[in-house]
Length: 503
Image (tube, rainbow, N blue to C red; front, side):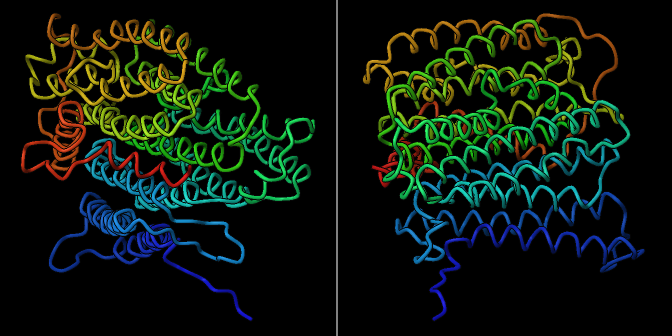
């Protein structure tokens, strides 16, 4: 008897995977032609067409995921062996990943042309990595979790070294690959130990067979946690982050900084709740230590950075610490706050990197703090946008960043996680210093060196506008905005509905 298969459970993943294949075919078919439909086939035109194809499939995946979220019913790929489930948590995460990938795709068109690395495999790799993320957040079995992580990671290793002419880009790819392979090995070993201790690879089976007094099970959980802490850039498994963020092309850094974090945290949330919901207090202690170290190292090391991409890398590490506070609280309210934080973070961080992308000039990134000196006089619009994103990342009221931090801290206090919350507030004060270094340089220092390019690609403009609007809307009206145009945005309700099915 053939198994009952529901392709809808992997619909978004399949759409994005098919899109990656079509991008490769389209490049082969179009790159050998001199003209197509009356248009001369240039490198810039070909890159734009491939970006359009990629955007089409990402939009389709976004629509399918959102429609599934609205309906609210869960679909299992193979009910007799449930390894992939498209429920509200997966649908919300997939929609957020698709949206982050879509904006990253638009951000890349002008940037790749500016740096003269406009190769078609870029978009195929981006779509393949996105399909892995979508599989990861909908996986309910250790085998599919590992498969999703590898499908996500391998294309990103390549993307990190996509600017093959630059030694720094090659170095970042090699570091990411070596450290990532080591983390994947630890993760796989942990999964094998959990299977040996429980006899199951599915999360529900692990929950019934997990015994904390069994050293095999405890070690397996620890190694799996190590694998995930690498993906979320948590201390002490964060060493790769600043080098990779700095060396990779900025459009790649923007993409991986938001989508990988969403995928890893969403998968970790499902894993901890569904497989280790009754885990021992020791797990909470470990998460508390990880969160505290991540907050301190991320924020204090960011203070001394002169490169904006490295500063944002340590900022990303610090934000992983704030998100881990929600995991320490481990309540539906806290997990809802984590998802809202991820939603706001996508637009705050993508916007900040979007400004760096828009300033790329003559094949070089404008990524040092000194390069931003006097930007308010030469590019006032970009200076204002960068200030908004820095303020949001710092958690200043009126922005989505403030609401996100407030919700996490509130959930932690309600659960009695007082010490860690105080540390989070204090390190947030520290973060204000390094985030405001950029506005100070842009508005209070004289321009120095070469003036960055004045024109801005249409894709970059759309991305920056969308990010700015969403950051402000989430900060002022996180749920049910009174403005008609944004009245459909009910971010708090969406995140609560996403985690409700886990409890």
